[in-house]
Length: 288
Image (cartoon, rainbow, N blue to C red; front, side):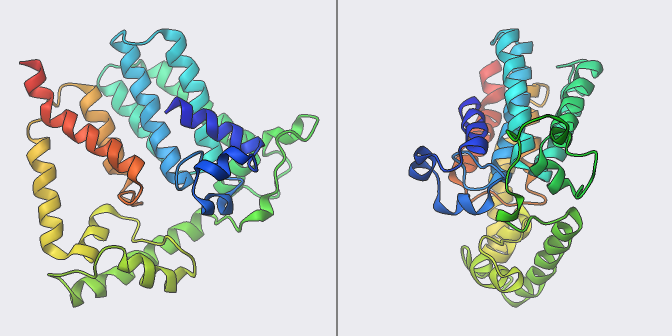
């Protein structure tokens, strides 16, 4: 995850570097100046790095990594999360910090410092303030008060949506999924059919799934598909040791992120999510 963060920061300043065109999907250039590193989309990167930051805090608590490794990772992760300009990850990180505090992983002061640094980074970079909805301000982004143009990027490469526009588009996708579920409650539409047809027609762009984990499974695979997914998840989660934050917090964060997004078709996020599920299923056995 640290490697992904470093690649993301490098991408912000050198987006046309040959290495990125070689390793990442071609459409990732379409979302710049939002960074996606080597991932398919900035939202996935931001969410994954948020989970990585909490993992670092928990590993430091267990003395598996040093304090320098932990806090250096937090520094890089926070900058990359701000540059990914994923509002999903901006909301997810405070949730993870709250859970870490409730489990006694960090103190309240340390958690507030991390959230405060995230807010500073969001207000510092132009792409982050633009995505936050702060536009044509004389105060923000804070980078405007620094001489030189190192932090200036072309925000006209993509029509970035305001928070209100993003919320409206998600509501449209959710509402459009309901009639399709009613039409095919048993069989569903099929894998990625909603995204390729309905979502593309609604928003006139690619990659527009329902942006909700359970709703997307239901519209694509029907009620049987959703039941199988729930049974599979429950079979593993009932075996989890819920007293261990390193088991619980990543799972809650990954599931919470997909209430307003859908990452199953990103194999990197899916593989990591399945790893955490497998760890949860084996956690009680490991204690024994």
